[in-house]
Amino acid sequence: MTPAGEPDGGAPRPEPRAARPPRAARQERKQVLLRLDPQVYDALARWAGEELRSANAQIEFLLRRALSESGRLPGGAAPIPPRGRPRRTSDS
Image 1 (cartoon, rainbow, N blue to C red):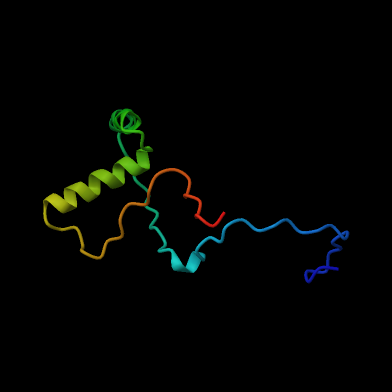
Image 2 (tube, one colour):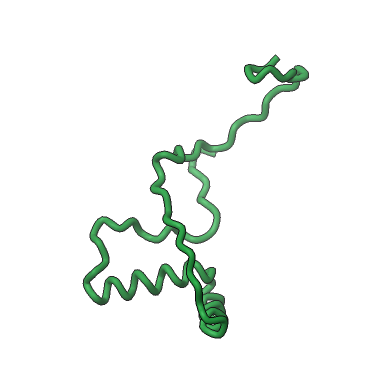
């Protein structure tokens, strides 16, 4: 029996992948509901596609740029997370 009370069938457990940072170490991202005019959203989505971003990433990029240009971007703001899958560590 496993600690959860389920039989393990005697099968070996697979090797764990490279350790990920614990979720508590990552800063939680705020979720915001945003209502947009459909034509504005379509234009934004096309622009995002041209720059290989999601519409959400494009909105964050534009908001950060506007905040930075107006001198209102907080110095402690975390950078935009890198796109794509997390890179593998060198020990794998």
